[in-house]
Length: 261
Length: 236
Picture 1 (cartoon, rainbow over the protein chains, first blue to last red):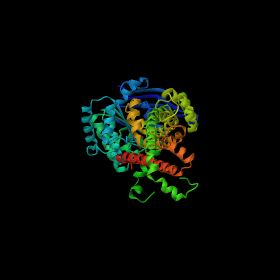
Picture 2 (picture 1 turned 60 degrees about the vertical axis):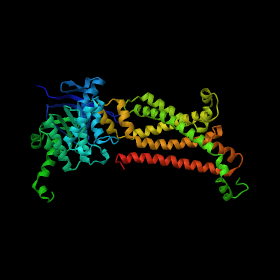
Picture 3 (picture 1 turned 135 degrees about the horizontal axis):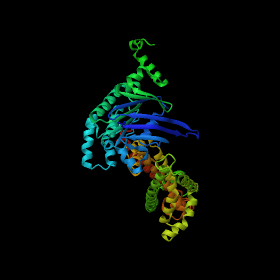
Picture 4 (picture 1 turned 120 degrees about the vertical axis):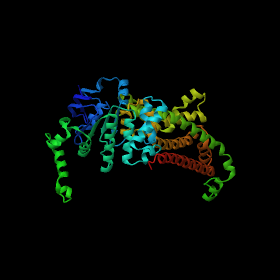
């Protein structure tokens, strides 16, 4: 059986001042249905570009992306819009619409995909309850805390009942406590609805807490991938080693005792 | 009464007298009419052209480099014409539309022609202020471009669009005063005919008060509305 999300030999080159910059340099990736798959990398490793290539906000130069049997790169414009209705995306900066209330923000993806108003109302209130925002539906995003904003972001991503969500640094702008709540929420929707989640982040703990399998992205290449445990214990790439080292450091008795290193 | 033979104080007192003001209500009406109609035309065309500029921008929704460069160049050309020259250039156009080249309606054409390019640029810069992430989010959800423009781009930048419009309406107002020289009537006409040509400085003073009050009113309303919107969105 082939994987749910299958990326093969994906290339993307930008030309920022006329000079070629290889951001993705032959990415191969398999994500199974129903799992939360982590991608970790330093800034500039190509994480966000990879995320944007999957829903074609960026057009890849070459390679293939197959999602649930659909060849993403060969979709026509209309097909692409329909495909995007079926996949959610969560952002580091939330990217909520300030001109709309929380309700309208969550309803927006349904409105643009032509869901009848009655159903919109029901779906929004269901989703708001799931993410714990029933009280805030009439508020504007400007009145919410970071954690609440990200809950709206998640509600907006899952309200269309997608099979697949891309989380692009969803917790990187949040404090540790809120991060855990948001990660718990992501785990919950993953288990409850079987939504496959691709979690892109530079935070070790987020990956360790949420994912079973992960890949390390380094200089536009996947340098290693496998079970999270294996990579932390026995890293083979520079980034992996560095992350493992940082992780060990935080776990070391000197550090946890608070005596400094 | 003139400053040439009377003291400043006497002219000031005369400028408040009822005889002067009873001749001013008509021109005030003309000025308001010209400002309102020109602003409305400017608003409609300015928004449309501003949106086109924004989306055809190389980083916009529908990048069209050639059209963007050409329209940018054309707008810069139009904007480099001083308003007075624009009025003169528009005389044949006004004659074509209204059958006469002078009067309030004729000048509205000139004022709109002069202010549309300016307001289009202001709209463009307001629209460019939007956080690109919001557009990206709307695209990731599968929005068509038209819903991005109508439901995201315009509402999100509304407070900034209103502030830009306020500034532009004030420019329109000052231009109606200039158009007074070309037979448009209004406050500018009074200021030129009485204040400049006949040295009746009391009337000139009265015109200045009116313009100052109008500008304060317009700016005040614009600030109030944009602040209200920001407040309702909990952004201030």
